[in-house]
Length: 144
Image (cartoon, rainbow, N blue to C red; front, side, top):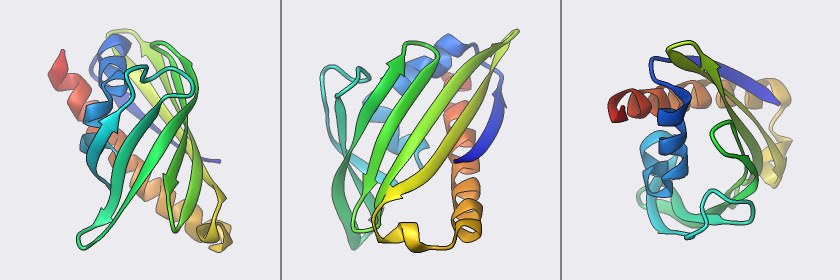
């Protein structure tokens, strides 16, 4: 798993509000371009976000499913971006006094993109997830 961490000047509750609002997904997830539907149970295990990924005109409709969730603390997802494949993603939110600490761990688990050598995959995911956490922090800090 590739890990990236970011401190946030917002309490964990504000971070979780962003994570729990599936309609905000394309605002903080790099590569997600639009939301088509959010299951009413989001972010409960088994619920899905129906989104699109890519850059126009190469946009693909896909979904992301919650594998596990601990309200306010952890969200584990199976993110799909076919034809590239699927990734296991875990986001943790930890209390840090007046703020929070965010950690995202991600790696590809299926699909052709898994054949990209690990050092290149790791670098790509670190750059992408650093920006993803920066966006998530920005939203949480402004929601409070």
